[in-house]
Image 1 (cartoon, rainbow over the protein chains, first blue to last red):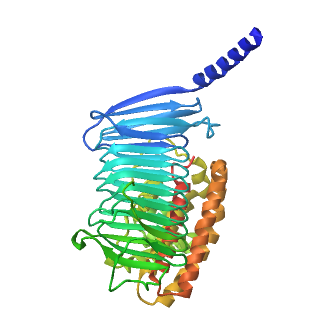
Image 2: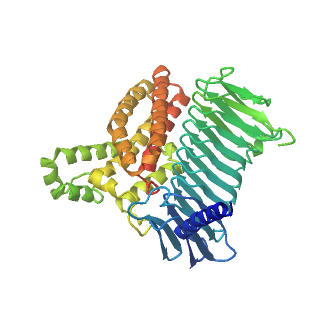
Image 3: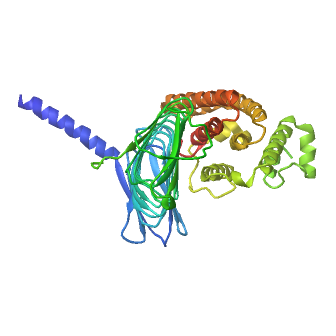
Length: 287
Length: 204
Protein backbone atom coordinates (compact mmCIF):
# COMPACT_ATOMS: atom_id res chain seq x y z
CA UNK A 1 0.00 0.00 0.00
CA UNK A 2 2.75 2.33 1.06
CA UNK A 3 4.82 1.48 -1.97
CA UNK A 4 1.90 2.22 -4.33
CA UNK A 5 1.37 5.61 -2.76
CA UNK A 6 5.07 6.34 -2.92
CA UNK A 7 5.14 5.36 -6.59
CA UNK A 8 2.22 7.71 -7.29
CA UNK A 9 3.96 10.56 -5.51
CA UNK A 10 7.16 9.95 -7.43
CA UNK A 11 5.24 9.87 -10.72
CA UNK A 12 3.46 13.13 -9.93
CA UNK A 13 6.75 14.64 -8.85
CA UNK A 14 8.37 13.64 -12.11
CA UNK A 15 5.53 15.14 -14.16
CA UNK A 16 5.66 18.41 -12.24
CA UNK A 17 9.45 18.51 -12.44
CA UNK A 18 9.31 17.80 -16.17
CA UNK A 19 6.87 20.61 -16.71
CA UNK A 20 8.97 23.01 -14.68
CA UNK A 21 12.12 21.96 -16.52
CA UNK A 22 10.47 22.55 -19.88
CA UNK A 23 9.33 26.01 -18.83
CA UNK A 24 11.79 28.79 -18.52
CA UNK A 25 11.51 32.39 -17.46
CA UNK A 26 13.25 35.36 -18.93
CA UNK A 27 13.26 38.97 -17.90
CA UNK A 28 14.28 41.96 -20.00
CA UNK A 29 14.59 45.57 -18.88
CA UNK A 30 14.79 48.68 -21.00
CA UNK A 31 15.09 52.32 -20.04
CA UNK A 32 12.89 54.54 -22.17
CA UNK A 33 11.87 58.16 -22.35
CA UNK A 34 8.42 59.71 -22.31
CA UNK A 35 5.82 58.33 -24.69
CA UNK A 36 7.80 55.25 -25.59
CA UNK A 37 6.57 52.66 -28.05
CA UNK A 38 6.41 49.02 -27.02
CA UNK A 39 5.50 46.20 -29.33
CA UNK A 40 4.99 42.53 -28.46
CA UNK A 41 4.39 39.93 -31.18
CA UNK A 42 3.46 36.53 -29.84
CA UNK A 43 1.92 33.82 -32.01
CA UNK A 44 0.87 31.59 -29.14
CA UNK A 45 0.22 32.73 -25.61
CA UNK A 46 -1.04 35.62 -23.58
CA UNK A 47 0.22 39.17 -23.19
CA UNK A 48 -0.66 41.34 -20.23
CA UNK A 49 0.46 44.94 -19.95
CA UNK A 50 0.33 47.08 -16.83
CA UNK A 51 1.93 50.38 -15.85
CA UNK A 52 5.41 50.46 -14.37
CA UNK A 53 6.49 52.84 -11.64
CA UNK A 54 9.17 54.64 -13.65
CA UNK A 55 10.53 54.99 -17.15
CA UNK A 56 11.38 51.35 -17.44
CA UNK A 57 9.93 48.63 -19.60
CA UNK A 58 10.08 45.26 -17.86
CA UNK A 59 9.24 42.15 -19.82
CA UNK A 60 8.69 38.88 -18.00
CA UNK A 61 8.31 35.95 -20.35
CA UNK A 62 7.43 32.38 -19.55
CA UNK A 63 8.57 30.11 -22.37
CA UNK A 64 6.82 26.77 -22.42
CA UNK A 65 9.58 24.89 -24.25
CA UNK A 66 12.96 25.29 -25.88
CA UNK A 67 11.29 25.44 -29.28
CA UNK A 68 10.65 29.12 -28.89
CA UNK A 69 12.92 32.06 -28.18
CA UNK A 70 12.29 35.66 -27.28
CA UNK A 71 13.90 38.21 -29.55
CA UNK A 72 14.17 41.69 -28.15
CA UNK A 73 15.52 44.95 -29.41
CA UNK A 74 15.50 48.60 -28.48
CA UNK A 75 15.75 51.32 -31.03
CA UNK A 76 15.72 54.71 -29.36
CA UNK A 77 12.45 55.07 -27.56
CA UNK A 78 10.97 51.96 -29.10
CA UNK A 79 11.11 48.43 -27.70
CA UNK A 80 10.24 45.40 -29.82
CA UNK A 81 9.64 41.96 -28.36
CA UNK A 82 8.93 38.97 -30.51
CA UNK A 83 8.43 35.28 -29.87
CA UNK A 84 10.57 33.48 -32.35
CA UNK A 85 9.32 29.98 -33.17
CA UNK A 86 11.96 27.39 -33.88
CA UNK A 87 11.57 24.33 -36.08
CA UNK A 88 8.86 21.98 -34.91
CA UNK A 89 7.16 24.45 -32.62
CA UNK A 90 3.40 24.16 -32.31
CA UNK A 91 0.70 25.87 -30.31
CA UNK A 92 1.81 24.19 -27.09
CA UNK A 93 5.56 24.16 -27.40
CA UNK A 94 5.66 27.59 -29.04
CA UNK A 95 3.68 29.24 -26.33
CA UNK A 96 5.05 32.19 -24.43
CA UNK A 97 3.14 34.11 -21.79
CA UNK A 98 4.20 37.70 -21.25
CA UNK A 99 3.70 40.09 -18.41
CA UNK A 100 4.92 43.50 -19.42
CA UNK A 101 5.25 46.66 -17.37
CA UNK A 102 5.49 49.89 -19.32
CA UNK A 103 5.41 53.58 -18.41
CA UNK A 104 1.77 54.62 -18.27
CA UNK A 105 2.20 57.03 -21.17
CA UNK A 106 3.71 54.41 -23.50
CA UNK A 107 1.96 53.37 -26.68
CA UNK A 108 1.63 49.63 -26.99
CA UNK A 109 1.04 47.24 -29.87
CA UNK A 110 0.20 43.65 -29.01
CA UNK A 111 -0.33 40.76 -31.40
CA UNK A 112 -1.29 37.23 -30.50
CA UNK A 113 -3.26 34.62 -32.39
CA UNK A 114 -4.50 32.48 -29.58
CA UNK A 115 -3.64 33.91 -26.18
CA UNK A 116 -5.49 36.58 -24.30
CA UNK A 117 -4.49 40.22 -24.68
CA UNK A 118 -4.88 42.49 -21.71
CA UNK A 119 -3.97 46.11 -21.10
CA UNK A 120 -4.85 48.27 -18.14
CA UNK A 121 -4.24 51.61 -16.43
CA UNK A 122 -2.49 53.32 -19.32
CA UNK A 123 -2.88 56.64 -21.09
CA UNK A 124 -0.88 55.91 -24.21
CA UNK A 125 -2.33 54.45 -27.37
CA UNK A 126 -3.32 50.80 -27.29
CA UNK A 127 -3.35 48.73 -30.45
CA UNK A 128 -4.30 45.08 -30.07
CA UNK A 129 -4.76 42.42 -32.69
CA UNK A 130 -5.42 38.74 -32.42
CA UNK A 131 -7.29 36.21 -34.51
CA UNK A 132 -8.72 34.12 -31.72
CA UNK A 133 -7.42 36.17 -28.85
CA UNK A 134 -9.75 37.32 -26.12
CA UNK A 135 -9.14 41.01 -25.51
CA UNK A 136 -9.57 42.82 -22.23
CA UNK A 137 -8.78 46.53 -21.98
CA UNK A 138 -9.59 48.57 -18.90
CA UNK A 139 -8.88 51.85 -17.18
CA UNK A 140 -7.45 53.66 -20.18
CA UNK A 141 -7.73 57.42 -20.59
CA UNK A 142 -7.03 60.03 -23.26
CA UNK A 143 -5.82 57.49 -25.78
CA UNK A 144 -6.60 55.67 -28.97
CA UNK A 145 -7.75 52.12 -28.42
CA UNK A 146 -7.81 50.03 -31.57
CA UNK A 147 -8.74 46.37 -31.44
CA UNK A 148 -9.01 43.79 -34.20
CA UNK A 149 -10.12 40.25 -33.63
CA UNK A 150 -11.54 37.45 -35.70
CA UNK A 151 -13.54 35.48 -33.17
CA UNK A 152 -12.04 36.47 -29.84
CA UNK A 153 -14.29 38.31 -27.42
CA UNK A 154 -13.56 41.95 -26.66
CA UNK A 155 -14.16 43.54 -23.29
CA UNK A 156 -13.55 47.25 -22.83
CA UNK A 157 -14.06 48.67 -19.38
CA UNK A 158 -13.68 52.25 -18.16
CA UNK A 159 -12.17 53.88 -21.25
CA UNK A 160 -12.35 57.64 -20.72
CA UNK A 161 -11.95 60.21 -23.47
CA UNK A 162 -10.87 57.47 -25.84
CA UNK A 163 -10.75 57.21 -29.55
CA UNK A 164 -12.02 53.67 -29.71
CA UNK A 165 -12.24 51.48 -32.79
CA UNK A 166 -13.07 47.81 -32.61
CA UNK A 167 -13.28 45.45 -35.58
CA UNK A 168 -14.42 41.93 -34.87
CA UNK A 169 -15.73 39.34 -37.26
CA UNK A 170 -17.58 37.05 -34.93
CA UNK A 171 -16.42 37.83 -31.41
CA UNK A 172 -18.78 39.50 -28.99
CA UNK A 173 -17.91 43.03 -27.95
CA UNK A 174 -18.82 44.34 -24.50
CA UNK A 175 -18.19 47.92 -23.44
CA UNK A 176 -18.76 49.31 -19.98
CA UNK A 177 -18.21 52.98 -19.20
CA UNK A 178 -16.56 53.65 -22.53
CA UNK A 179 -16.72 57.19 -23.85
CA UNK A 180 -14.84 59.67 -25.97
CA UNK A 181 -14.90 61.62 -29.19
CA UNK A 182 -15.26 58.43 -31.24
CA UNK A 183 -16.41 54.98 -30.24
CA UNK A 184 -16.87 52.72 -33.23
CA UNK A 185 -17.49 49.00 -33.39
CA UNK A 186 -17.90 47.01 -36.59
CA UNK A 187 -18.70 43.31 -36.49
CA UNK A 188 -19.95 40.72 -38.92
CA UNK A 189 -21.83 38.43 -36.60
CA UNK A 190 -20.71 39.34 -33.09
CA UNK A 191 -23.04 40.71 -30.48
CA UNK A 192 -22.37 44.27 -29.30
CA UNK A 193 -23.26 45.29 -25.78
CA UNK A 194 -22.77 48.87 -24.59
CA UNK A 195 -23.38 49.87 -20.97
CA UNK A 196 -22.68 53.51 -20.25
CA UNK A 197 -23.92 57.02 -20.86
CA UNK A 198 -22.54 57.86 -24.32
CA UNK A 199 -20.41 60.65 -22.82
CA UNK A 200 -20.64 64.22 -24.04
CA UNK A 201 -20.59 65.30 -27.65
CA UNK A 202 -19.02 62.13 -28.96
CA UNK A 203 -19.78 59.95 -31.90
CA UNK A 204 -20.85 56.39 -31.20
CA UNK A 205 -21.29 54.01 -34.10
CA UNK A 206 -22.10 50.41 -33.30
CA UNK A 207 -22.58 48.15 -36.31
CA UNK A 208 -23.04 44.43 -36.67
CA UNK A 209 -24.20 42.66 -39.78
CA UNK A 210 -26.11 39.84 -38.13
CA UNK A 211 -25.28 40.25 -34.45
CA UNK A 212 -27.59 41.87 -31.93
CA UNK A 213 -26.83 45.29 -30.52
CA UNK A 214 -27.87 46.27 -27.03
CA UNK A 215 -27.21 49.64 -25.42
CA UNK A 216 -28.10 50.15 -21.78
CA UNK A 217 -28.03 53.79 -20.75
CA UNK A 218 -29.25 55.93 -17.85
CA UNK A 219 -32.33 58.03 -18.36
CA UNK A 220 -30.35 61.28 -18.06
CA UNK A 221 -28.19 60.47 -21.08
CA UNK A 222 -27.90 63.23 -23.68
CA UNK A 223 -27.86 61.73 -27.12
CA UNK A 224 -29.16 61.99 -30.63
CA UNK A 225 -29.98 58.36 -31.38
CA UNK A 226 -30.62 56.67 -34.71
CA UNK A 227 -31.14 52.95 -34.88
CA UNK A 228 -32.07 50.73 -37.75
CA UNK A 229 -32.11 47.06 -38.57
CA UNK A 230 -32.51 46.51 -42.30
CA UNK A 231 -33.97 43.01 -41.92
CA UNK A 232 -34.28 42.55 -38.16
CA UNK A 233 -36.15 44.42 -35.46
CA UNK A 234 -35.58 47.21 -32.96
CA UNK A 235 -36.83 47.83 -29.45
CA UNK A 236 -36.71 51.07 -27.54
CA UNK A 237 -37.46 51.26 -23.81
CA UNK A 238 -36.61 54.94 -23.52
CA UNK A 239 -38.89 57.68 -24.78
CA UNK A 240 -37.11 59.80 -27.36
CA UNK A 241 -38.07 63.17 -28.74
CA UNK A 242 -38.87 62.45 -32.36
CA UNK A 243 -36.65 63.98 -35.01
CA UNK A 244 -37.98 65.88 -37.96
CA UNK A 245 -35.53 64.40 -40.40
CA UNK A 246 -33.64 61.13 -40.68
CA UNK A 247 -31.54 59.59 -43.42
CA UNK A 248 -33.76 56.51 -43.42
CA UNK A 249 -37.43 55.77 -43.38
CA UNK A 250 -38.50 55.12 -39.82
CA UNK A 251 -40.41 51.87 -40.19
CA UNK A 252 -41.97 50.98 -36.89
CA UNK A 253 -40.26 47.94 -35.46
CA UNK A 254 -37.31 48.27 -37.82
CA UNK A 255 -35.98 51.68 -36.89
CA UNK A 256 -36.25 54.54 -34.46
CA UNK A 257 -34.65 57.93 -34.16
CA UNK A 258 -34.86 60.72 -31.67
CA UNK A 259 -33.12 62.80 -29.06
CA UNK A 260 -32.90 62.68 -25.30
CA UNK A 261 -31.37 64.92 -22.64
CA UNK A 262 -29.58 68.19 -23.25
CA UNK A 263 -29.03 68.98 -26.89
CA UNK A 264 -25.86 71.02 -26.25
CA UNK A 265 -24.09 68.04 -24.69
CA UNK A 266 -25.63 65.51 -26.98
CA UNK A 267 -23.61 62.69 -28.47
CA UNK A 268 -24.44 61.21 -31.85
CA UNK A 269 -25.37 57.57 -31.53
CA UNK A 270 -25.87 55.34 -34.56
CA UNK A 271 -26.87 51.72 -34.00
CA UNK A 272 -27.03 49.72 -37.17
CA UNK A 273 -27.47 46.09 -38.06
CA UNK A 274 -28.50 44.25 -41.16
CA UNK A 275 -30.35 41.29 -39.74
CA UNK A 276 -29.74 41.46 -35.99
CA UNK A 277 -31.87 43.02 -33.27
CA UNK A 278 -31.30 46.38 -31.66
CA UNK A 279 -32.41 47.11 -28.13
CA UNK A 280 -32.02 50.47 -26.39
CA UNK A 281 -32.57 49.82 -22.72
CA UNK A 282 -32.91 52.04 -19.70
CA UNK A 283 -30.35 51.32 -17.05
CA UNK A 284 -31.79 50.49 -13.67
CA UNK A 285 -30.34 52.05 -10.52
CA UNK A 286 -28.61 48.79 -9.65
CA UNK A 287 -26.56 48.64 -12.85
CA UNK B 1 14.22 44.32 -65.93
CA UNK B 2 12.35 41.25 -64.71
CA UNK B 3 8.95 41.03 -63.04
CA UNK B 4 10.28 41.41 -59.52
CA UNK B 5 12.34 44.44 -60.46
CA UNK B 6 9.39 45.97 -62.22
CA UNK B 7 7.12 45.50 -59.22
CA UNK B 8 9.76 46.99 -56.96
CA UNK B 9 10.17 49.92 -59.32
CA UNK B 10 6.44 50.66 -59.12
CA UNK B 11 7.07 52.08 -55.66
CA UNK B 12 8.94 54.91 -57.41
CA UNK B 13 7.09 55.21 -60.72
CA UNK B 14 3.70 53.70 -60.14
CA UNK B 15 2.23 54.19 -63.61
CA UNK B 16 4.88 52.13 -65.39
CA UNK B 17 5.92 55.03 -67.56
CA UNK B 18 9.69 54.83 -67.27
CA UNK B 19 11.64 53.54 -70.25
CA UNK B 20 12.69 50.33 -68.54
CA UNK B 21 9.22 49.69 -67.23
CA UNK B 22 7.65 50.22 -70.62
CA UNK B 23 10.12 47.83 -72.20
CA UNK B 24 9.20 45.11 -69.71
CA UNK B 25 5.48 45.78 -69.91
CA UNK B 26 5.44 45.34 -73.66
CA UNK B 27 6.38 41.70 -73.25
CA UNK B 28 4.70 40.81 -69.95
CA UNK B 29 0.90 40.54 -69.84
CA UNK B 30 0.87 39.77 -66.08
CA UNK B 31 2.71 42.96 -65.15
CA UNK B 32 0.66 44.94 -67.65
CA UNK B 33 -2.52 43.74 -65.95
CA UNK B 34 -1.05 44.68 -62.60
CA UNK B 35 -0.26 48.22 -63.74
CA UNK B 36 -3.76 48.52 -65.17
CA UNK B 37 -5.20 47.58 -61.80
CA UNK B 38 -3.02 50.15 -60.11
CA UNK B 39 -4.23 52.76 -62.56
CA UNK B 40 -7.79 51.78 -61.72
CA UNK B 41 -7.15 52.22 -58.02
CA UNK B 42 -5.47 55.57 -58.59
CA UNK B 43 -8.34 56.72 -60.77
CA UNK B 44 -10.87 55.61 -58.15
CA UNK B 45 -8.92 57.36 -55.42
CA UNK B 46 -8.91 60.53 -57.48
CA UNK B 47 -12.68 60.56 -57.49
CA UNK B 48 -12.99 60.33 -53.75
CA UNK B 49 -14.66 63.30 -52.19
CA UNK B 50 -13.29 65.20 -49.24
CA UNK B 51 -16.24 63.98 -47.21
CA UNK B 52 -15.10 60.40 -47.73
CA UNK B 53 -12.14 60.75 -45.41
CA UNK B 54 -11.08 57.18 -44.62
CA UNK B 55 -11.27 55.98 -41.06
CA UNK B 56 -8.14 55.11 -39.07
CA UNK B 57 -8.90 51.48 -39.90
CA UNK B 58 -8.01 52.24 -43.48
CA UNK B 59 -4.75 53.81 -42.42
CA UNK B 60 -4.04 50.74 -40.31
CA UNK B 61 -4.56 48.58 -43.39
CA UNK B 62 -2.21 50.72 -45.40
CA UNK B 63 0.38 50.60 -42.66
CA UNK B 64 0.23 46.82 -42.60
CA UNK B 65 0.56 46.67 -46.38
CA UNK B 66 3.56 49.01 -46.28
CA UNK B 67 5.19 46.91 -43.58
CA UNK B 68 4.69 43.81 -45.68
CA UNK B 69 6.35 45.56 -48.58
CA UNK B 70 9.22 46.61 -46.37
CA UNK B 71 8.60 50.24 -47.26
CA UNK B 72 8.44 51.20 -43.61
CA UNK B 73 10.46 49.77 -40.79
CA UNK B 74 8.99 46.58 -39.42
CA UNK B 75 8.53 46.62 -35.68
CA UNK B 76 10.46 43.38 -35.20
CA UNK B 77 13.96 42.36 -35.75
CA UNK B 78 13.54 38.67 -36.41
CA UNK B 79 12.38 36.59 -39.28
CA UNK B 80 8.77 36.56 -40.41
CA UNK B 81 6.28 34.28 -38.77
CA UNK B 82 5.11 33.09 -42.16
CA UNK B 83 8.18 32.25 -44.15
CA UNK B 84 6.23 30.24 -46.67
CA UNK B 85 3.83 33.04 -47.43
CA UNK B 86 6.40 35.04 -49.33
CA UNK B 87 7.63 31.91 -51.02
CA UNK B 88 4.20 30.78 -52.07
CA UNK B 89 2.82 34.14 -53.17
CA UNK B 90 6.12 35.62 -54.21
CA UNK B 91 6.00 39.09 -55.62
CA UNK B 92 2.29 38.72 -56.23
CA UNK B 93 1.55 38.81 -52.49
CA UNK B 94 1.32 42.56 -52.61
CA UNK B 95 -1.69 42.14 -54.87
CA UNK B 96 -3.65 41.30 -51.73
CA UNK B 97 -3.25 44.70 -50.08
CA UNK B 98 -3.84 46.19 -53.50
CA UNK B 99 -7.02 44.14 -53.77
CA UNK B 100 -7.96 45.26 -50.27
CA UNK B 101 -7.52 48.87 -51.34
CA UNK B 102 -9.62 48.14 -54.40
CA UNK B 103 -12.33 46.73 -52.19
CA UNK B 104 -12.20 49.84 -50.02
CA UNK B 105 -12.36 52.04 -53.09
CA UNK B 106 -15.39 50.10 -54.26
CA UNK B 107 -16.89 50.45 -50.82
CA UNK B 108 -16.42 54.18 -51.02
CA UNK B 109 -18.28 54.20 -54.32
CA UNK B 110 -21.14 52.61 -52.50
CA UNK B 111 -21.38 55.60 -50.21
CA UNK B 112 -21.72 58.03 -53.00
CA UNK B 113 -25.15 59.42 -53.47
CA UNK B 114 -25.12 59.63 -57.22
CA UNK B 115 -26.34 57.07 -59.72
CA UNK B 116 -27.41 54.40 -57.26
CA UNK B 117 -28.43 51.87 -59.91
CA UNK B 118 -25.05 52.08 -61.55
CA UNK B 119 -23.38 51.76 -58.16
CA UNK B 120 -25.29 48.55 -57.57
CA UNK B 121 -23.97 47.18 -60.84
CA UNK B 122 -20.43 48.36 -60.18
CA UNK B 123 -20.18 46.54 -56.89
CA UNK B 124 -21.45 43.21 -58.15
CA UNK B 125 -18.34 42.40 -60.13
CA UNK B 126 -15.72 42.87 -57.39
CA UNK B 127 -17.87 40.88 -54.97
CA UNK B 128 -17.65 37.84 -57.18
CA UNK B 129 -14.06 38.28 -58.27
CA UNK B 130 -12.72 38.89 -54.76
CA UNK B 131 -14.39 35.73 -53.58
CA UNK B 132 -13.20 33.59 -56.49
CA UNK B 133 -9.69 34.97 -56.63
CA UNK B 134 -8.60 34.90 -53.04
CA UNK B 135 -10.51 32.59 -50.73
CA UNK B 136 -9.00 29.24 -51.69
CA UNK B 137 -5.45 30.59 -51.69
CA UNK B 138 -5.97 32.17 -48.32
CA UNK B 139 -7.41 29.02 -46.81
CA UNK B 140 -4.54 26.99 -48.20
CA UNK B 141 -2.10 29.36 -46.56
CA UNK B 142 -3.91 29.09 -43.24
CA UNK B 143 -4.05 25.30 -43.56
CA UNK B 144 -0.31 25.15 -44.16
CA UNK B 145 0.74 27.52 -41.42
CA UNK B 146 -1.94 27.34 -38.78
CA UNK B 147 -3.96 24.16 -39.24
CA UNK B 148 -5.39 24.54 -35.77
CA UNK B 149 -7.08 27.76 -36.85
CA UNK B 150 -8.30 26.56 -40.23
CA UNK B 151 -11.82 25.87 -39.02
CA UNK B 152 -12.07 29.28 -37.42
CA UNK B 153 -10.93 31.00 -40.58
CA UNK B 154 -13.29 28.94 -42.72
CA UNK B 155 -16.19 29.77 -40.45
CA UNK B 156 -15.44 33.48 -40.47
CA UNK B 157 -14.82 33.55 -44.20
CA UNK B 158 -18.17 31.88 -44.72
CA UNK B 159 -19.85 34.43 -42.45
CA UNK B 160 -18.32 37.42 -44.14
CA UNK B 161 -19.08 36.10 -47.62
CA UNK B 162 -22.64 35.54 -46.51
CA UNK B 163 -22.81 39.11 -45.23
CA UNK B 164 -21.53 40.37 -48.58
CA UNK B 165 -24.15 38.34 -50.42
CA UNK B 166 -26.97 39.52 -48.15
CA UNK B 167 -25.93 43.15 -48.34
CA UNK B 168 -25.47 42.91 -52.09
CA UNK B 169 -28.99 41.53 -52.36
CA UNK B 170 -30.35 44.40 -50.29
CA UNK B 171 -28.50 46.97 -52.41
CA UNK B 172 -29.84 45.35 -55.57
CA UNK B 173 -33.34 45.51 -54.14
CA UNK B 174 -33.08 49.05 -52.85
CA UNK B 175 -30.18 50.93 -54.42
CA UNK B 176 -31.12 54.10 -52.54
CA UNK B 177 -30.99 52.44 -49.14
CA UNK B 178 -28.06 54.08 -47.41
CA UNK B 179 -27.88 51.45 -44.67
CA UNK B 180 -27.81 48.59 -47.15
CA UNK B 181 -24.93 50.26 -48.95
CA UNK B 182 -23.11 50.88 -45.71
CA UNK B 183 -23.62 47.24 -44.76
CA UNK B 184 -22.05 46.19 -48.02
CA UNK B 185 -19.10 48.51 -47.48
CA UNK B 186 -18.64 47.22 -43.94
CA UNK B 187 -18.79 43.64 -45.18
CA UNK B 188 -16.02 44.32 -47.67
CA UNK B 189 -13.94 45.97 -44.99
CA UNK B 190 -14.42 43.01 -42.69
CA UNK B 191 -13.34 40.65 -45.41
CA UNK B 192 -10.33 42.81 -46.07
CA UNK B 193 -9.53 42.63 -42.36
CA UNK B 194 -9.78 38.85 -42.40
CA UNK B 195 -7.21 38.68 -45.17
CA UNK B 196 -4.90 41.09 -43.37
CA UNK B 197 -5.21 39.07 -40.21
CA UNK B 198 -4.31 35.83 -41.94
CA UNK B 199 -1.31 37.44 -43.59
CA UNK B 200 -0.23 39.46 -40.63
CA UNK B 201 2.71 38.73 -38.39
CA UNK B 202 0.53 37.48 -35.56
CA UNK B 203 -0.37 34.54 -37.72
CA UNK B 204 1.74 31.63 -36.55
